[in-house]
Amino acid sequence: MTIEEKVAKIKEDLDFFEDELQKYEYVIDLGKKLDSLEDEYKTPENIVHGCTSQVWLVGEEKEGNLYFKGTSDAIIVKGLIYIILEIFSGEKIETLKNVNMDIVYELGLSEVITPNRQSGVIGMIKKIKELAQKA
Image (cartoon, rainbow, N blue to C red; front, side):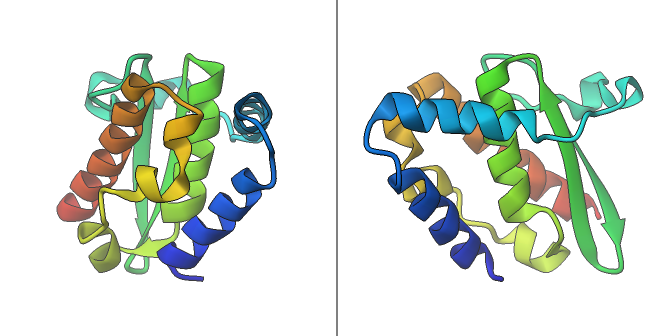
């Protein structure tokens, strides 16, 4: 499945809910499915800049693809991380280097999360692009 197809699927899931509160609760529920991140990865170099809360994101290369893990100290942000990882984890490094930063708008998250959280999502995508550049 391409990144665009993954985004369309998540947007379709979010659009299922009629009001913002239901979408918000859905994103929180997604965060509960996020795999835990070991404390050894909660280091300054793994911090995502631009987020209101603390967010850690790490990548691991396997056969030309990057796989990500992450977490946050905020429950809603864990849900956002889950969404971002669903979209980007496992993609080819070259694909990740050229990711469109407007994905937050394509998902329609602007009606669910604050502008500060939106900039945090953009920060996560920037971090993913950085990790792809370094791989």
